Every structure is written in structure tokens, then in C-alpha cells.
Image (tube, rainbow, N blue to C red; front, side, top):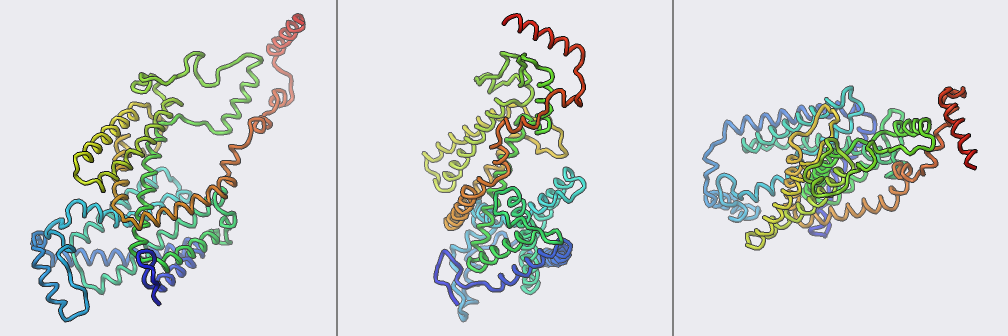
Length: 474
């Protein structure tokens, strides 16, 4: 049965992919232990196949392939396919031959498409609640996984070809492992969002095995429909652009949060309110931790050389504005770099945008960073997050127009769910709507805080004298 929607849907629906997704969804619904065992088996088979491909490729490989003439490959390929129904290979599909036959642009396009290799690290972050020391274990797990994935893909691309049977077995196990790794954190993310009110409440239902059964089934059905209707390449590109956007947002958030002042918790704020209620009696006390008249004001000097060694509201605001403007400039830079070509006006615009981003990076770097002690911190701020944003957005621009259209449709659906439901049922929004009078209801009077006993003699005498003076004035 063929689907006649070229460029939008797959030519033929993939029932085998639907069967695999439904099977893995049922496996995830049972619990973590069963799915973890299957994942270990698939991972071991996948690693063995990768090692076999690397070893066999290195044995039969030759450095002469990096200097081969594309015309030679074209003649041999077309000669072997004369008596077959396979399409003829053109010189355009072979590039210039040798090492990097499609140039730097081809490498970047391939990197943008193959970015799905680095999908699944959210699985490590979403299971942080089950780790004894997540501050130490999560960074180590993510960095180790990144290195393993890089070595595996670098070894396979360097080694070359391997027998098709082993490749087919390895591909099946690799796709099953990737699918299982992608479907494991997705139900937990949906469950956490439903618990916070951002998604529908029925998705937060948990089974007797302590597994998010509703979100698992919803994620499985949605994934099965996507695999049934769309082509594999389109799904890979869609997953790549979503991953690149997520990593871009992470880099921007790291850049913003490192320069924000510490926000005390609600209990600390309530304790401060109670302490002020006890100590202040008609006397105004500065609540910002600064002397009167010493509040920071926006100026060129405070922006370029702030005097406060700790992050403040002003420095955090400067970083927020700088990162927002830089994000727009990076997007514009990537669009011009990919589609503008080598025109003189385009190169001038790129140079101006790059200089503006460098100036904004310098401003962000001049602001004081948070002194909070963490087990892992991104080094070389603000340069590494800015470089990450540049690379990710540029790789996103390498993807095709159809990928951007599908991504835009999913974003519209997500925004519709958020603005029509999530923003009205969010737990954070409910806490923000609570008035200060409601919070002050939890503050007890001074006598109740002291256990109903009498006040200290000094404070009682002070209040008594103050009352006498007030009565004399009247």
C-alpha cells in the first residue's frame, strides 16, 4: 500500500517499525529492570558488531582510497549496474573524490544529519533522582558516554565497509538500543511535566510497579504513528534538529544562570519576614542587603567594570539582555553564512555580526560569576557556551527545508498545548499568582512564635515608653 504524498509522508508505511515500538513500549511499561536487561543485551551485541566492523575495515582498508579518482569509481559502478535495475550513479553524487570529497560544507551537513548519535544523554539526567551522588555521577556519565560514542563512530567511518550480514544485525540492535534509550526518558519527562501541570493530569498516573504507565503508552503510540507515516531520514533529521535546539538552550541557560544572584528559598524568605517582624517596630530596614543610596544603577561603568564582586540584579539583567541579543545575532549569522554565499556585502555583514557577538561576549565575561560550589562547572565561561551556540545553530541551518517545516509544525502544536492548557494549570504559575497577603498568613505573631510567653523586659519597656510618647502627642 503506497502513500502518495512525496516530500511529506513516507512512500510506504512501516509496519515493522510500529511492531518494534509497541513491543519496546510494553517492555518499558513493566519497569526499569526488565528494560535495562534487554538494553544491556542489545548494547553488547552492538558493541561486538562495531568492533568487528572496525577490525575488518582496518585489515582490508587502504590509504589509497583517500586519493582515488571519482571517474574511476563512476566507471566501475556504472559498468557493474548495466544489467541491473539499479539507477545509474552520477558524478555529482561522488563529489571530488579522495579525502573529504564534498568539502567542509559536506562534512557539516553530514554532522548535522548524524547528530542523532549524540541523542540519549537526557536518559542520564532524568535518572539522576535514583543516583546516590548525582552531582558527581551525572557529569561523569555524560562525558564518558560522549567519548564512547565519538570513538565508536570515528572508528566505523575510518575503517570503511564490513560484510552486509553483520552490518544488518548490528543495525537492528543499534536501532533497538537507540529507540529504547530514547523512549526510556521520554515517558519520565512527560510524567514530570504532567505532575507540574504543564501537560494533562492523566499522564501522571503511576502503576503498581512505580512505572509511569500512562505517559509510557502515550509516548509509544505517538512514536508508532510517527514511524508509520514518515520516512526514516525525515525522522532522523527531525530528531537532530530537536537535539541541536535542546543543546543550544542548555548552553544559553548555563551562560545565564552562572551570572545570576542566588535566590533564597521560600523557607528562608519566611524566616527573614518573621525576623523583621520581631526586630522592626515602625523602623524601616533596608531589605536588599545594601545601605540606603548604594543601590546599583545602570551605567556604562557598571556594565564594563562592575564594582560588586557578587552577582546582583543589575549584572543578571545585563547578562540576560546580552545573551538574548546574541542569540538573535547568532541565528542571523548562521542564516547568512549558509545561504549568503561569498558576496562582498554578505561577508561585511558577517564580520559586523561576528564583531557584535564578540563585544557582547566581552560584556558578559566582565560580569561577576556566582560563587556557588558545585561538583562540576563548565570551564572557560563565557566562551564555551557561546561557541556551542554558534556550532549548534549553524548545524541546524544545514538541515533541509522540509525538516524545518516539520519542526515548525511540532513547535506550533507544543505552544498551543502550553498556552491553552499548561500555562493555566502550571504549579509554578499557581505559586506566582499567590499574593503576598496569602504568604503572610503563615507568619505568626511574635507572642505565638515565642511560645505564648512574655516578651523580654527590654523590648517590653521600649514598647511601653514608645506608647507613652505617642499618647502624649495626641
